[in-house]
Image 1: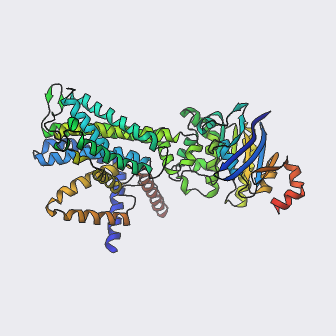
Image 2 (image 1 turned 90 degrees about the horizontal axis):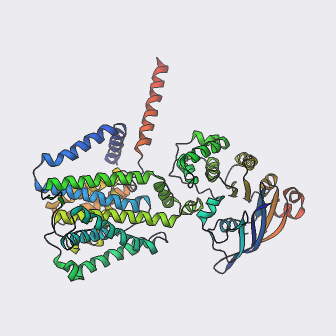
Image 3 (image 1 turned 90 degrees about the vertical axis):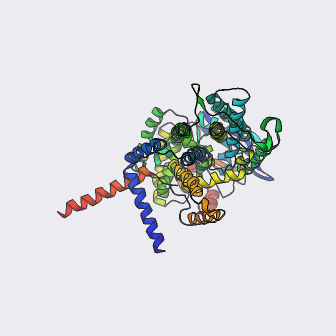
Length: 344
Length: 234
């Protein structure tokens, strides 16, 4: 028990430090993240970190639905897969340029998102989870069996790499930078969305939908729009993923993979953007570090989850308002200063 | 001139008839109160005026316009606002965000102005502006719920049991404000269990019993009437 208390204390210390030095920490992090591909030539590191960036984007998109809207969705990977297939096929068969393919992937995924949102978001609770779980499997089965379009279990090979202004970007470094740009744009988009009037009504629906309705908020409409935005982001990054890894296969897009994203954002903290970053990074890198342990790593994974649920049910950074913590620390300091002044 | 009128409203929950034909008229600038026992249908009536409950029969008009089948958000937009039973504030939102949600249809500049009006009514909310809604006391939460409803600039404000779970002293404080809200040109419909308090505040009163209006009179008369005193004031 003592060690756990110590850990808790250390953790709050870290959080308080971060809250007090937000801007310098942000700058340092941004510098590290941008400089990273120029410091390492190790392809494996670059690959893992690019996947990390993609996972964060997916985590952010999922967090929009699960964290801010409060409904669990298993469709993240389905939309990701739809975007990947749509992107790959539009490059290979229609000859679309890279960026257009990403937009095509985005629109296709958003279209499917609209179809799912139309009937399911009238209801609240677990209906969305059940429908999206089924949807994810349907999409995988279609990808598996529509031989003419997707080549089924052979997967699609030799997808052309991302091309910008006629330059093929095959290097891991260039792809890392593109992923980083996508992540930055998505983060800014989601941060603004969440802090806007739209985000406020979204959170009010999550917290108390009947009160939100009494306030005159069109809850079904807002939930649908939010779900479609989330799907669109997944589709966009999916089309990028296809052109980055150049090989896609239905087995990467199962509902089991969706669960991993759910675990990531719960681990990091629902409804928290820094939490999503942290959760996605840790749970993408950790399995890689533990590759030597083979199947036993799942054991550690599980144990970690149980410990988290017990001691930090809100996730690492869930329910954490850095602004509020900063204000509290400043208030506390003022008080101690005043006390010191009185003693003199 | 009646601003809100309900004619022969019937509401069913499955096989149970919650409202069995209710008719009432609310005049502009009035404070009316609905009193009745638990399960009489007071809250159902409020919710059906707001369009939150499907209606089996009847007609509701607001300012001469039929709003029976309108969606809740359109009713809110036209100026009929409900401060729901048990407050239903957002505990995880700051006081300001709670209030801003009330002004969902207003522009930012309108909301800032409206915020000042709410703060003159409830100065305590200004002190608590950055606090989470859930950390407020019961009375403050009720003030927040009323303030949030006021942010939408209501023409008709419906208050569902504002005294629920509050200390008598705070109830008196809150009820005193209803007169001031009326002076702002707001018509108030007050649903209450605390009949004595409600009758002292209101102009007119409807008594509801198992989905029907059984008595309708001025509040003064009802305070003196034997049957009401026996049934609701003890």
